[in-house]
Length: 306
Length: 306
Image (tube, rainbow over all chains, first blue to last red; front, side):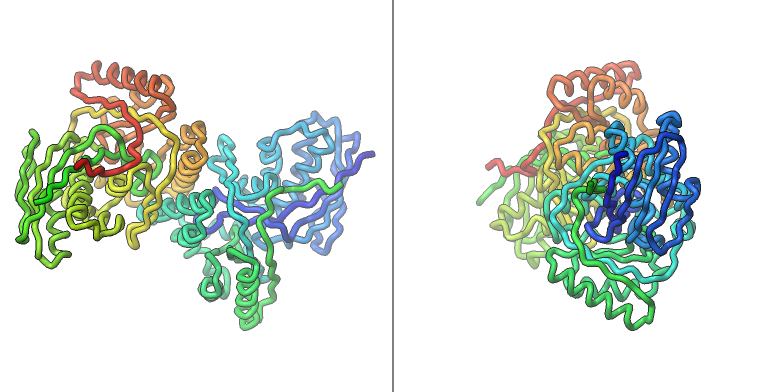
């Protein structure tokens, strides 16, 4: 029976000023998955990593995505999946999205690619709903399509790929727990119009910077006056990391998704490596365990390996 | 003594979802101005139109701009200016900005173009402050630079030209009074985060649509869930005009600046003319006097004629 193996990339949602509407795929880290078609409607999950994620399909992010596909196929099929996560759950770089999107793309491949990207995003959002309580596509869309994606709207789904220069990305994951649902709850439901205006100036600037390859404009626009001031309180060392990384030459950056990971964009690899050193210096002082990644924008999205 | 003659274009601020950050210059209508350098620090104003605007420099939009330039030049010079307005004051298509920007560009030309565009925008914003109580650049910037401009930030000033396809613009000016200061006061100072998210998805979509020449995306993104629902109440016939114009093929549109003018974007001239007919039909029924314009995006900004 046919087996498909995929790599499903980490993603950075929000990109500072684009809360809930922008996301970017990374070349590193990524999850690996092997998936096989079954002829009866069930999902068998094998975890090949250290994270002890649930193996009941209803409680597993990849599982609920596969269940939704099985339902769409009128319960005529099932899947057996082996998941080897390298993206730590709770890191804020799209671990749940990688599981969800990887499962959706792999299953679609087994089924002869009968679903469109929009349909795959819809299936995969069921996984995000399980993980965070909210259907959002700012990790899912770039995970499936690659590159930087604008999610203009969820209802109806409207995903727009945003071409960008080949930026380098440095990520630090301080190993503290920030639950996505908590990070959502501390946000104010009402914001000042004047802050919103500043934010939409930045969003328009950021997207224009990507499309025009204008590095300075990208840097100037990586400013968030609404979400970051609230969420950054949950991340020890955030202000120092941000200031020091920009001094080290980063164009800018901020919280990845709802945190705790922090990402920075740089024009070249040597700057991205200096930025990594700065991140290490800050977190070595705090005594908090951390991981770092120096990587680039993944332009392919979930990839069929064999 | 050298005399400079300029044409200063009408402008559409906001472009629906880009409140306070986007503006676009039009080829029609425009103001005409003649300006002459004096060797003593005063401003003499001659109005060559029917609008009875003040001729005291401190109370005249072009006057305060020229006074600020005179002050910058250490009171060593003055200006005599003749203003022939074709853009009706209070129409919502940048009448005050045309006076302010036209005066600034013309004066700069007389002085040997010693000021940068950013400096000209700063001078011209003094005119906007007089007209509306607030320094804003979303009419001034496109009036001076032409095309579509993003004003990412006022402090510090950060203006980004947004290339766009050659769209056609239809404008209807229903001749009711909407004062800019009133149109600002009815806005809520607090907005819902979920509305802001929808708005910044649209802004990012609109700018991407312009940069990628994606007409459908431009159309889908011309949606304003924050300002239009409040301000459109001040404009009789607004909902009907908007719905009918889109049925007639317009990509979309909305209130120009703070109104009362309403603009629509179209892909081609014949659609733009159909849209004009629809606008006329709506306002003929209401009994409100109106003007219409069918024009294109002005890519040059204030133009030195001789």
